[in-house]
Amino acid sequence: MKALIRLIILAALAAGCGDSSTSPRVFTDSLSLGTGRQGIDLVGETTTFTGGLITIYWRVESREKLKSADVEFMVEKYAEGGYETVYQTINGPAGPVSNVVIASYYHTFGPGLFRATGFIGSARRVVGPETFTVKEAVSP
Image (tube, rainbow, N blue to C red):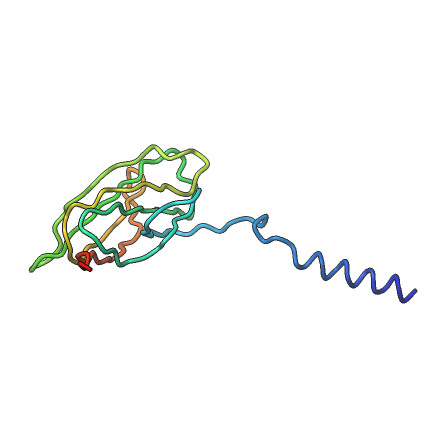
């Protein structure tokens, strides 16, 4: 009897230690930046980039399925008096069952303070903005 109780307890503990990757993923309205991608995730998520000509990956996530909606991505550079648009692209339509769009752009706008914003669908639902910095590469 004690052996049976131990077996039940061990089975319950083992069941509680399962892989959480099988649980449904919860999506939110968000915008993130990084240095690469892996599947529907970014790698090297950051808001500080270093270098002259760099590739910046962006990820727009929607709390709702995108249902083939276009996703627009815009980058603005801060200048005295406000932000000025330096890059803009439209990706889409996104997959009908997807909550995520990931793409990249080649940053050729020099160092400075920038702001990235995503827009979803024809209603242009705003995701973000995310402020980020590009620094000059330091010579060795």
